[in-house]
Length: 139
Length: 206
Image (cartoon, rainbow over all chains, first blue to last red; front, side, top):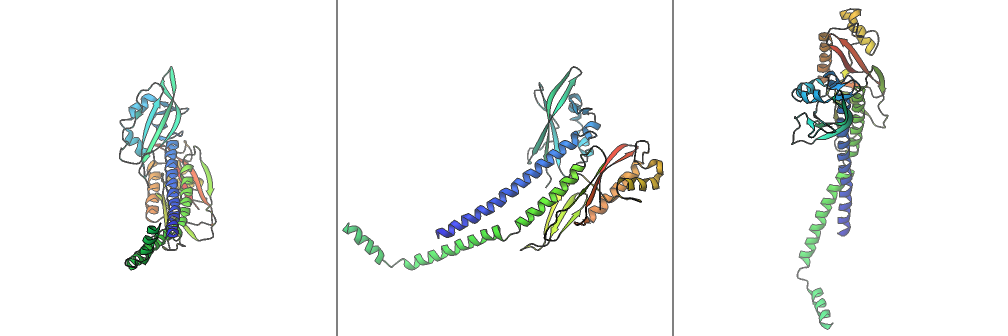
């Protein structure tokens, strides 16, 4: 009886291994997706550069980013990214509250990827900042 | 001591609950056996390893297509599917990479689907040669050599380009293209210049 219980526990461990592997693969996929979205948006010729939010040299214009929070949905449509939803958040030195595209749902699993980019405040100030992409939905 | 021995003897001689105990033990053995069989079947007789391998292969190919989209300049590359001891098929549609293998134990067919984050342009119309050059030649044959979209001075009509792209999207969304796993898949970052500006596509062909 004890031997059989022991075997049951052993087999349950094996199943646990598969479950952990599956969860890890899903996490890796999700982080790769988030990273892809971040790279695509911030690439030269990407939608953020076309909209003037990213200036030449990969510098984010803080004013343009804040203004774009009203029409982010059309920007998302034109980005060419399909099958998932995503939002953006920008934080920089001295910003107080981060700037967000406020379509981020609270009831979904969200995965994020971040990148350090310089943020243009005005002609006299360009400070370090972090652009974060948050994705949800998909598989 | 004497009292203890007497108690033990009386317990051993008490045959009243033996059958009940025996039946209980048999029932427990059967229950544990069923539990072990179900867990063992999940662990050793399911096709999860094969499905996991198929998922990784589909994911690798999908990631390769997506990261081709990140290239800033026109570029061509090839993708080779791994050689395996079993037969498998790969299908590509504008939304998914689908991988099928037929060596499952319980379920003969194992199907894995990986969604794509971008729409690749599958088998665009090409003339005389393969790849972006063949596409430009095809557009040039429709709109004139000076309007083949290959450079900013030879802008093509964006309506025509959009129409061709949407046609390919619909066609391969309905009937995904089956790729030959023994031949390389060509992936190319193609830039088409139109009146509406520069359009970037990842084209895929064999």
